[in-house]
Length: 344
Image 1 (cartoon, rainbow, N blue to C red):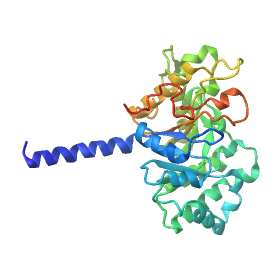
Image 2 (cartoon, rainbow, N blue to C red):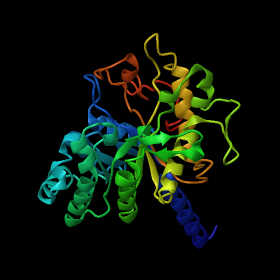
Image 3 (cartoon, one colour):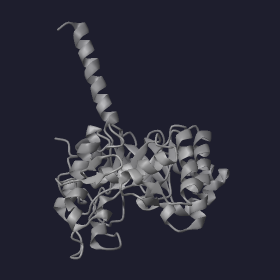
Image 4 (cartoon, rainbow, N blue to C red):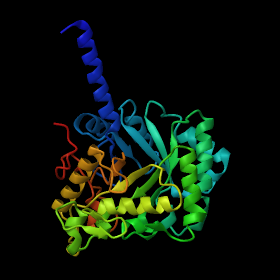
């Protein structure tokens, strides 16, 4: 092989490796509600060297985590707390928030996004709901003022903001939220080249009769008479319901990010959905679908970032047993099951 041919082959191989690294979008939600979790520095090293996970989302701006992920090549989404939202509508406060929570770590830590609150529209706290978009706009301006224009601003939503989701083609937002809150938010996201963050959980739509449909196993499918599409998994149906709702408002072009989705591997006796095999099947197929860039029936070949909930089983989470068993890993980094995310 000539030197020129070898150089060309090397550059092509490098390009393919870079392309694979940037287009694989498997993320995890890294929660910390446990008293037995490993140090963030060990977590960063483990994810970078042992897994295909190349992005995390955290529910705060934990300094130890942000320092640990410096120079890790792992993208990070941070969260401004729900209670911070009213104050963040003021530019001085937003600038101070950026100076405290972003500036000390960026760009050594690859912070790509700030999530303003979490599931605010379902919080029933009017002070948060009606200040959400103003806070997002002000925080975006504060990031630009600080020279951090590549860090985008968004906020995650549950599917509770849908008035209808079945069939997927008839997905629409709740009247009152649709044009007053969601449409202006989508306009802001489009203008700033940000993303619409949603938390689709087929787990919460589980019924024994629909188990296979919910966890990506073989089933007869669910027919949408309007599009003549048969859906063979609930995740695609939920995604397309959101897309249909967005399209009805004229914003079908705004990218969607799956900010949370997952399945618990154990639960209480009255929680039949919470089984290790269900969790394995759901997350394994989800990872496979994201890697393949398949999109959904109404969004074919669309690229999605997806953040699995969650990284670890967190033993201090309140609520039913299931809440403490969403993790992909035990605190000692042992996989709870094979989700297809480990490097060979």
